[in-house]
Length: 91
Figure 1 (tube, rainbow, N blue to C red):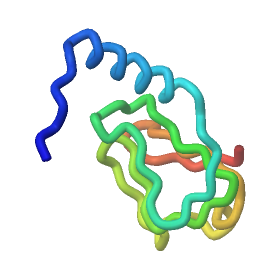
Figure 2 (cartoon, rainbow, N blue to C red):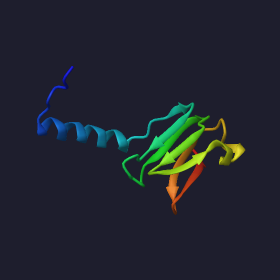
Figure 3 (cartoon, rainbow, N blue to C red):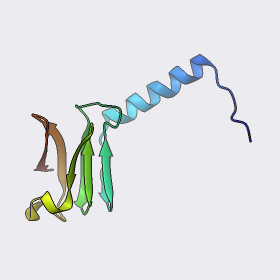
């Protein structure tokens, strides 16, 4: 089935909506992967109510569960990119 064509103004509107969504954190239970800033946005953050993720990624920097401090597992945390490393802090 062919995709419907959208106008440039509709594309801009969709972009604005996506930008607005990025400004407000979304708290959720991360079960497998938590990704943010996939397009290279180093200011992106991850907020979770209970960290259970096997993989965290912000702007192409990854952290696997084996390298996450045990005290953060199962806790509400915020993940941010600082000095090219993912930093996990209590939320």
